[in-house]
Image (cartoon, rainbow, N blue to C red; front, side, top):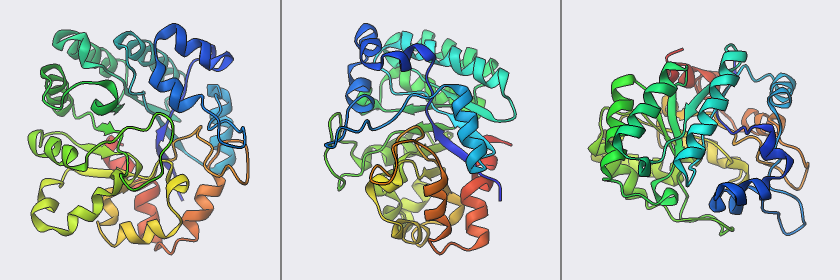
Amino acid sequence: MRIIDVHVHLYPPEVGRDPVAWAAARGETHWAALCTRRRSDGQPVQTFPDVDRLLHDMDAAGVEQAVLLGWYWEKPETCAWQNRFYAECVRAHPDRLAAFAAIHPSAGEAAVRAEIRRSHDEGLRGLGELSPHSQGYALDDAAFAAALALAGELRMPVNLHVTDPNTRRYPGRLETPLEDFVRLAKTHPQVTWILAHWGGGLPSWETNPIMRQDLARVFYDTAASPLSYDDRIWRTMLDLVPPEKIIFGSDYPLILYPKIGREPGWCGFLEEINGAGLTPEEKGLVLAGNAARVLGR
C-alpha cells in the first residue's frame, strides 16, 4: 500500500551540528523551546537527520514520498533560508520529496508574495507549517491575507499548526483557539487547508451541518498523534468526518514512542494504524490517496 507523509521536518546540516547555538544566533527562540528540549528522562524530543538519513528511514518503513514542511519561524529571513534548502532537496529527489514554503507576514505584503511565487517556481507545493498564534500576527493581517489569496490562486494548500486545548502542557506550547481556524476557512474559502495534529479536535465540530459546510475545504493531518492520543483516535475521527478528509502525517523526526525507542521513524506508527480497525479503503485514502489528491499528484 502506498504511503505519503505530508508532515515531515528537515533542516540543513548546520542546524543539526548544534541546534541550540544555531537557534540563538538566528533569534529563533520559540523553535528552540520546542525542538531542542529534553523530556523528563533526559531524552531529546527529536533528532536532526540529514536528507540521506531521511531517505534511508523512508525506505526502511516503505514510505514512498515525504512532504517537507517549513516551520513557523520568527524571522522572515529564516523562512527564505529554509525554502531555498527545500528547493534543493526537491530538485535532488523529485520522486521522493515534495515541500511547502515557510513565510512570515512581517516581511510585508510585497515581500511575502514574492517569496511565495519564487518558492512556487522552484517547485514547492504549498505553504506551512504556519502558526499566526506562534509567529505573532493577526488573522486579518494584510500580508497574511495576501499570502492566502495567492496560495488559493496558485492552488497551494496551506498547513497550519493546531494545538488541542485538552492535551498536556509542555515548554513552548501556545493556545490556538479552534474558532480561529473556522474563521480563516470562512474568510478564505478559496484555500485548501491542512490542519495539523488532527486539527486539535476540530473534526468533532463537523457534526454540526453548518460547521461542516464552513469546513468543506479543510483536511486534518495526523502528525504526532501517538504523543497525545491512543490508537482509538483513528476510529473516533473517522466516525466524525469522512475518510477523504484525513491525511497521514508523522511529524518526523519527532520521536513518537519515547518509551520504546530513541530514534524517529514510521514503523511503530504504521503498526498502530494497521491495528486500528480501518478498512482497506480507509487506509488507502488516509495513507496516500488523499495526499495525492490535495497535492495534485
